[in-house]
Image 1 (tube, one colour):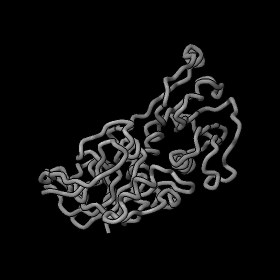
Image 2: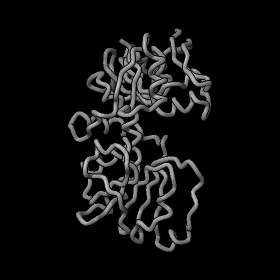
Image 3: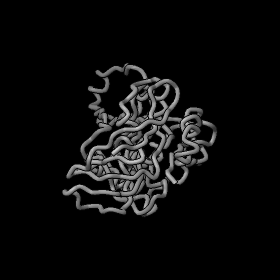
Image 4: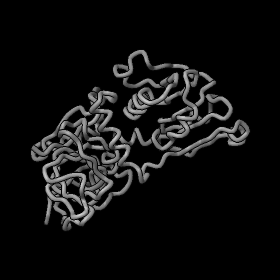
Amino acid sequence: MQSRILYTEGKGHFAEGTIDISDVAPNQIRVASKKTGVCRSDIDMMNGNFGPLPLNMQGHEGLGEVVEVGAQITDVKVGDYVATRGEPAYADFYNAEDGTYVKVPSLDPKYIVEPVACGLNVVMQEEAQFEARSNKDAKLCIIGSGFLAWVVYQYLNANYFFKIDVIGKSNKELWGDKLKDNFDNDYDIVIDLNTRDEVFKMDLLKPQGLIILGAEKTNSITTNFDKLLWNAVTVVFPSPRQKDFKRCMQTAVKMIESGQLNVDNFWTKGYNRDKEWQSAFAEGNKRMPGYSRGYIEWC
């Protein structure tokens, strides 16, 4: 079958096109799009910063309804709602493989959980490290105060004992008095969600401390690695494409349902697929004050 899709060729805008959707394989489901988040990476691709990707790889923060299931699928049925991680979620219909979707209770935009799971992925890959270091006197620092930091902070508070400092200047209305301006120098763990490399230029950690780099660096990292080695500092780079990403998505759904994870301020605005899709990308590009993230919605 064919499906409409929104796509970009990296020339500063998105356009409408069509793609062929293959038959549903035994390990796949077919999803009818209901909401798809506009990711910053989509805006970067639109502006020619990378790509462009093929049409069948555009849009990856999906939320929709199952309209067909493959013979091997047992965890969802036709009519269920699912959040998906993968492409092409800007299409009206697309196929999602087992392992790239999770069942959700409703089509509320808070269940567009792919970006939430990206935040959880930063810490859930290092659960053994957190469990080994967690105690009432352990200190942890999060560098950055954006949405990923907010997700990481809530997850850590719900699952571990740490004294947590959050260093950042943005989203003060979200963080309130939780934000700090100054670093200490005796942290057990530092989670760096900044795109710069300040974490390597400051003495933040105790010996045998842990640095988790949860954001891609915009420039090459320059540091004295001999000093890190001498102090037995561990540096880890969580993979954004880990095989267990579905577990991160499932955890996101459970925490949102239980109220342990509040993402109410993340999705700012929905844009009608037929009438407002151009505004979704244009306004996402402007990053207006008070604007967090928008999503395309199929009404």
